Amino acid sequence: DLDILLEGIPAKYFLSRGQQKLLVCAMIVAQGMLLAAQRNKRVVYLIDDLPAELDKQGRDKLMSMLAKQQTQVFITAIEKEIFCDVANAKLDIPVKLFHVEHGQLR
Image (cartoon, rainbow, N blue to C red; front, side):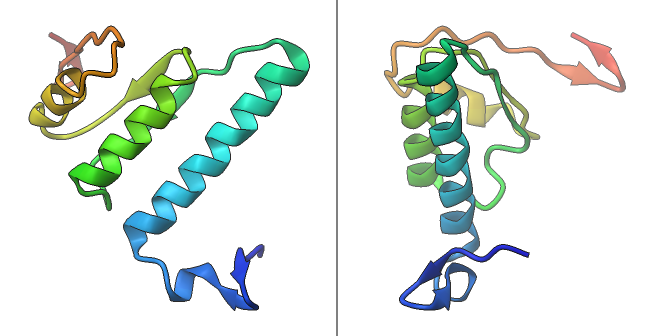
């Protein structure tokens, strides 16, 4: 079990769940940036249930971070409005929406 520490205290004790999710996402994006820099390879990011634990500000931060990577990102969410927020965030990224209902792509 690996803990991220700040002054010897595990981050999970002073970060909210949303802040923890952003921290983990930032670490994953950093890993993707390192891979791109060292191996000239782009990664594909998969974000399951984007709004879980994140408020609008947190989602915007994450989307901004991902948009700068200029790579493909797949995002899932229960509510369609979340994707409207992403499309309207003025990040200059193309957005395509796929709706799955009862196992069928609509």
